[in-house]
Every structure is written in C-alpha cells, then in structure tokens.
Image: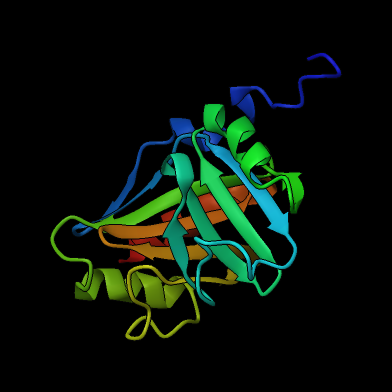
Length: 178
C-alpha cells in the first residue's frame, strides 16, 4: 500500500466470507464493502437532507443518514465516492469507508414478523413498533455502538470494523437461542 492509497485490503473485512445466519425465517448476512463519508456542517441549504433520525436516497444511488443536527453519513458504491466528495465540498468531510462494516438483517416472510421482532428486541433497546422504514438510530448492540436503519425489506446495521468478530459471535449466540 502506498501513501496515496488509504484503502484496506479485502482481508480486513473477513465477515464478507461468513455464511449468513438463520433463525426461523430471519437471516443476517454481511454486506459488500462500500464507500462511506461523514459530513459535518450546517445542512440547512442542502436540498436532500434527511429529517432527524431518518435517511434519504441521495445522488448517484447513495444513501444519506442523519447522525446528528450537524452530522450526516453518506454511503455509496466506492467508485462513486470521489464525485460525492466534490458534490459535498462545502462541508467538512471524513472518509470512513475502511472504518465501518455493514450487516443486513431481514425476514424472508414479513418485516414485522414475531421472529424478527424478537431478535430485534434482544439486540437493541429501541421501540421497534415506532421504527418505520426510512428511520435510523445510533444505539448500542452488546458493547458496540451501531447505526441501525430500517429499510422497506430489512434492517441495515453498521458498526466499527474493530467489533466485527465480537458482534458476529454475539449474533450467532442470539440466533442459535432463537
């Protein structure tokens, strides 16, 4: 790796090789590596800004997640990140692609199934009766800080890569218990 190349090799994202976990109709699987950019600043002039604790679709098939009143997370395909960095040049930026990894939690039969609700209640201390598609929240999962975002067909869970093995073992134990 040279000084200009700050990306980590794929070996640093070992959960991508894990077999998805299953409990009844619920599955948990690692997502492919993607580009991630933290933006900080005053977003009042930003046309496509998410409301508090929500996310929206952004330019170039990106997603923009609300992290706080002056902080957003933008995720996109890694090759789209340079264009997004230019588009958001008016904001303080920190590229965090190699800092976070993502998992996908979903129920093949119903996103409001009792099995999925049970697993969510064991993982997070959030009111999932009020957690609608388009909502996101930073919270704790075991001892790790995570971002959880509800999409129409499942839940995106993003966490610091240093917690990868810890969280995977935590999920494995929980899903074995059912």
